[in-house]
Image (tube, rainbow, N blue to C red; front, side):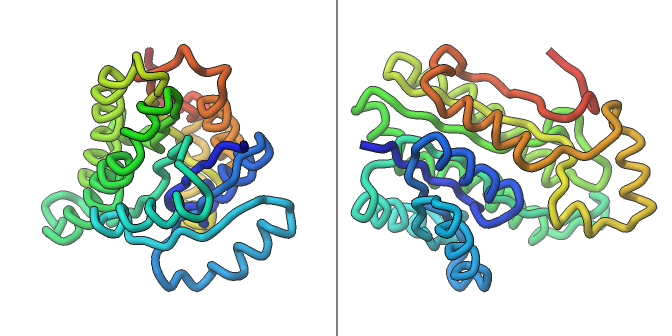
Length: 246
Protein backbone atom coordinates (compact mmCIF):
# COMPACT_ATOMS: atom_id res chain seq x y z
CA UNK A 1 0.00 0.00 0.00
CA UNK A 2 1.19 3.52 -0.80
CA UNK A 3 2.70 5.46 2.06
CA UNK A 4 0.84 8.40 3.58
CA UNK A 5 2.53 11.80 3.89
CA UNK A 6 1.19 14.64 6.01
CA UNK A 7 2.45 18.07 4.97
CA UNK A 8 1.60 20.97 7.27
CA UNK A 9 1.31 24.39 5.68
CA UNK A 10 0.80 22.46 2.46
CA UNK A 11 -0.89 25.10 0.34
CA UNK A 12 1.96 27.62 0.32
CA UNK A 13 4.61 27.78 -2.38
CA UNK A 14 7.09 25.37 -0.79
CA UNK A 15 4.33 23.14 0.61
CA UNK A 16 2.74 22.75 -2.82
CA UNK A 17 6.05 21.71 -4.35
CA UNK A 18 6.57 19.19 -1.54
CA UNK A 19 3.14 17.67 -2.12
CA UNK A 20 3.89 17.28 -5.82
CA UNK A 21 7.27 15.65 -5.20
CA UNK A 22 6.00 13.21 -2.60
CA UNK A 23 3.08 12.29 -4.82
CA UNK A 24 5.52 11.63 -7.66
CA UNK A 25 7.26 9.24 -5.28
CA UNK A 26 4.00 7.29 -4.96
CA UNK A 27 2.68 8.70 -1.69
CA UNK A 28 -0.85 9.72 -0.78
CA UNK A 29 -0.96 13.24 0.59
CA UNK A 30 -2.77 14.82 3.53
CA UNK A 31 -2.45 18.56 2.94
CA UNK A 32 -2.82 20.59 6.09
CA UNK A 33 -4.27 24.09 5.99
CA UNK A 34 -6.02 26.39 8.42
CA UNK A 35 -9.79 25.91 8.80
CA UNK A 36 -11.60 28.04 6.24
CA UNK A 37 -8.55 28.41 3.99
CA UNK A 38 -9.94 30.38 1.00
CA UNK A 39 -7.64 28.66 -1.53
CA UNK A 40 -8.56 25.17 -0.37
CA UNK A 41 -11.00 24.02 -3.06
CA UNK A 42 -9.11 25.63 -5.94
CA UNK A 43 -5.81 24.19 -4.68
CA UNK A 44 -7.26 20.69 -4.27
CA UNK A 45 -8.76 20.81 -7.76
CA UNK A 46 -5.41 21.90 -9.23
CA UNK A 47 -3.50 19.15 -7.48
CA UNK A 48 -6.00 16.43 -8.34
CA UNK A 49 -5.97 17.55 -11.97
CA UNK A 50 -2.22 16.87 -11.87
CA UNK A 51 -2.88 13.35 -10.58
CA UNK A 52 -1.97 13.99 -6.94
CA UNK A 53 -3.95 11.79 -4.53
CA UNK A 54 -4.66 14.33 -1.83
CA UNK A 55 -7.12 15.22 0.91
CA UNK A 56 -7.34 18.47 2.86
CA UNK A 57 -6.48 18.21 6.55
CA UNK A 58 -7.82 21.35 8.17
CA UNK A 59 -6.40 22.31 11.57
CA UNK A 60 -4.57 25.07 13.36
CA UNK A 61 -1.45 23.08 14.15
CA UNK A 62 -0.39 25.56 16.82
CA UNK A 63 -3.07 23.87 18.96
CA UNK A 64 -2.40 20.39 20.37
CA UNK A 65 -6.02 19.18 20.42
CA UNK A 66 -6.65 20.36 16.86
CA UNK A 67 -3.51 18.53 15.70
CA UNK A 68 -4.63 15.35 17.45
CA UNK A 69 -8.08 15.52 15.87
CA UNK A 70 -6.58 16.19 12.43
CA UNK A 71 -4.37 13.12 12.58
CA UNK A 72 -7.33 11.00 13.73
CA UNK A 73 -9.24 12.01 10.58
CA UNK A 74 -6.22 11.37 8.34
CA UNK A 75 -5.74 7.89 9.79
CA UNK A 76 -9.43 7.16 9.23
CA UNK A 77 -9.48 8.40 5.64
CA UNK A 78 -5.99 7.52 4.34
CA UNK A 79 -4.26 5.37 6.94
CA UNK A 80 -1.37 5.87 9.38
CA UNK A 81 1.05 8.70 8.67
CA UNK A 82 4.41 7.40 7.43
CA UNK A 83 6.00 10.73 6.48
CA UNK A 84 5.49 14.02 8.32
CA UNK A 85 6.75 17.26 6.82
CA UNK A 86 6.47 20.17 9.25
CA UNK A 87 6.20 23.11 6.86
CA UNK A 88 3.67 25.39 8.60
CA UNK A 89 4.98 28.76 9.62
CA UNK A 90 4.52 32.52 9.71
CA UNK A 91 6.63 35.65 10.12
CA UNK A 92 5.97 38.68 12.32
CA UNK A 93 9.17 40.64 11.74
CA UNK A 94 10.23 43.53 13.94
CA UNK A 95 13.35 44.76 15.64
CA UNK A 96 13.42 43.21 19.10
CA UNK A 97 12.95 46.45 21.04
CA UNK A 98 9.63 46.94 19.22
CA UNK A 99 8.54 43.29 19.13
CA UNK A 100 5.28 42.71 20.95
CA UNK A 101 4.53 39.73 23.15
CA UNK A 102 1.88 38.55 20.71
CA UNK A 103 4.32 38.68 17.79
CA UNK A 104 6.70 36.48 19.77
CA UNK A 105 4.12 33.90 20.81
CA UNK A 106 2.41 33.67 17.41
CA UNK A 107 5.66 32.89 15.63
CA UNK A 108 6.91 30.44 18.27
CA UNK A 109 3.54 28.65 18.37
CA UNK A 110 3.03 28.49 14.60
CA UNK A 111 6.62 27.55 13.70
CA UNK A 112 7.92 25.54 16.66
CA UNK A 113 5.12 24.44 18.99
CA UNK A 114 3.31 23.09 15.92
CA UNK A 115 6.25 20.73 15.34
CA UNK A 116 5.72 19.23 18.78
CA UNK A 117 1.94 19.17 18.39
CA UNK A 118 1.87 17.24 15.13
CA UNK A 119 4.95 15.05 15.59
CA UNK A 120 3.61 13.90 18.96
CA UNK A 121 0.53 12.45 17.20
CA UNK A 122 2.45 10.29 14.71
CA UNK A 123 5.81 9.34 16.20
CA UNK A 124 4.66 6.39 18.28
CA UNK A 125 2.87 4.83 15.31
CA UNK A 126 5.95 5.22 13.13
CA UNK A 127 8.15 3.60 15.78
CA UNK A 128 5.76 0.71 16.34
CA UNK A 129 5.59 0.00 12.59
CA UNK A 130 9.39 0.21 12.27
CA UNK A 131 9.49 2.94 9.60
CA UNK A 132 8.92 6.67 9.53
CA UNK A 133 10.24 10.03 8.41
CA UNK A 134 9.91 13.35 10.23
CA UNK A 135 11.25 16.33 8.28
CA UNK A 136 10.97 19.91 9.48
CA UNK A 137 11.47 23.07 7.44
CA UNK A 138 13.93 25.19 9.37
CA UNK A 139 15.71 28.15 7.77
CA UNK A 140 19.10 29.64 7.07
CA UNK A 141 18.06 32.32 9.54
CA UNK A 142 17.72 29.72 12.27
CA UNK A 143 21.44 29.01 11.84
CA UNK A 144 22.92 32.45 11.24
CA UNK A 145 20.22 34.66 12.80
CA UNK A 146 18.60 37.59 11.02
CA UNK A 147 18.09 41.25 11.92
CA UNK A 148 14.44 41.83 12.84
CA UNK A 149 13.67 38.13 13.22
CA UNK A 150 14.49 37.21 16.82
CA UNK A 151 11.21 35.29 17.06
CA UNK A 152 11.53 33.52 13.70
CA UNK A 153 15.24 32.73 14.12
CA UNK A 154 14.59 31.30 17.60
CA UNK A 155 11.77 29.09 16.33
CA UNK A 156 13.77 27.79 13.39
CA UNK A 157 16.82 27.10 15.55
CA UNK A 158 14.52 25.27 17.95
CA UNK A 159 13.40 22.95 15.16
CA UNK A 160 16.97 21.82 14.65
CA UNK A 161 17.52 21.12 18.34
CA UNK A 162 14.20 19.28 18.54
CA UNK A 163 15.12 17.12 15.56
CA UNK A 164 18.55 16.17 16.93
CA UNK A 165 17.06 15.17 20.27
CA UNK A 166 14.13 13.18 18.87
CA UNK A 167 16.36 11.47 16.32
CA UNK A 168 18.27 9.86 19.18
CA UNK A 169 15.09 8.51 20.75
CA UNK A 170 13.78 6.73 17.64
CA UNK A 171 16.97 5.92 15.72
CA UNK A 172 16.69 2.19 16.45
CA UNK A 173 13.01 2.09 15.48
CA UNK A 174 13.50 2.72 11.76
CA UNK A 175 12.45 6.36 12.09
CA UNK A 176 14.63 9.26 10.94
CA UNK A 177 14.22 12.88 12.04
CA UNK A 178 15.84 15.67 10.04
CA UNK A 179 15.65 19.35 9.14
CA UNK A 180 16.03 21.16 5.85
CA UNK A 181 17.12 24.80 6.06
CA UNK A 182 16.30 26.77 2.91
CA UNK A 183 17.66 30.19 2.12
CA UNK A 184 15.50 32.64 0.16
CA UNK A 185 12.99 30.84 -2.06
CA UNK A 186 10.98 32.27 -4.95
CA UNK A 187 7.51 32.19 -3.40
CA UNK A 188 4.69 34.72 -3.32
CA UNK A 189 5.87 35.90 0.11
CA UNK A 190 9.40 36.61 -1.14
CA UNK A 191 8.20 38.17 -4.41
CA UNK A 192 6.16 40.61 -2.31
CA UNK A 193 9.36 42.06 -0.82
CA UNK A 194 10.07 45.62 -1.98
CA UNK A 195 12.03 45.36 -5.26
CA UNK A 196 15.15 47.20 -4.08
CA UNK A 197 15.30 45.08 -0.91
CA UNK A 198 14.81 41.87 -2.91
CA UNK A 199 17.54 42.92 -5.35
CA UNK A 200 19.96 43.42 -2.45
CA UNK A 201 19.02 40.02 -1.02
CA UNK A 202 19.70 38.25 -4.31
CA UNK A 203 23.01 40.06 -4.73
CA UNK A 204 24.06 38.64 -1.36
CA UNK A 205 23.48 35.04 -2.46
CA UNK A 206 26.69 33.59 -3.97
CA UNK A 207 24.79 31.51 -6.52
CA UNK A 208 23.11 34.71 -7.73
CA UNK A 209 19.44 33.79 -7.62
CA UNK A 210 16.56 32.68 -5.42
CA UNK A 211 15.89 28.99 -4.88
CA UNK A 212 12.97 27.39 -6.68
CA UNK A 213 10.41 25.65 -4.44
CA UNK A 214 11.02 22.36 -6.24
CA UNK A 215 14.70 22.50 -5.30
CA UNK A 216 13.69 22.46 -1.64
CA UNK A 217 11.07 19.78 -2.26
CA UNK A 218 13.63 17.54 -3.98
CA UNK A 219 15.76 17.40 -0.82
CA UNK A 220 12.70 16.64 1.30
CA UNK A 221 11.60 13.88 -1.07
CA UNK A 222 15.04 12.30 -0.78
CA UNK A 223 14.96 12.43 3.03
CA UNK A 224 11.50 10.84 2.90
CA UNK A 225 12.75 7.92 0.81
CA UNK A 226 14.26 4.57 1.71
CA UNK A 227 17.55 5.79 0.22
CA UNK A 228 17.96 8.24 3.13
CA UNK A 229 17.70 5.58 5.86
CA UNK A 230 21.21 6.39 7.17
CA UNK A 231 20.60 10.13 7.58
CA UNK A 232 19.14 11.28 10.89
CA UNK A 233 19.60 14.23 13.20
CA UNK A 234 20.85 16.29 10.25
CA UNK A 235 20.10 19.86 9.23
CA UNK A 236 20.54 20.10 5.45
CA UNK A 237 21.32 23.61 4.14
CA UNK A 238 19.80 24.56 0.77
CA UNK A 239 20.74 28.21 0.49
CA UNK A 240 22.85 28.83 -2.60
CA UNK A 241 25.98 29.42 -0.52
CA UNK A 242 24.40 32.20 1.53
CA UNK A 243 25.60 30.58 4.75
CA UNK A 244 28.12 27.76 4.65
CA UNK A 245 28.68 25.54 7.65
CA UNK A 246 29.48 21.98 8.48
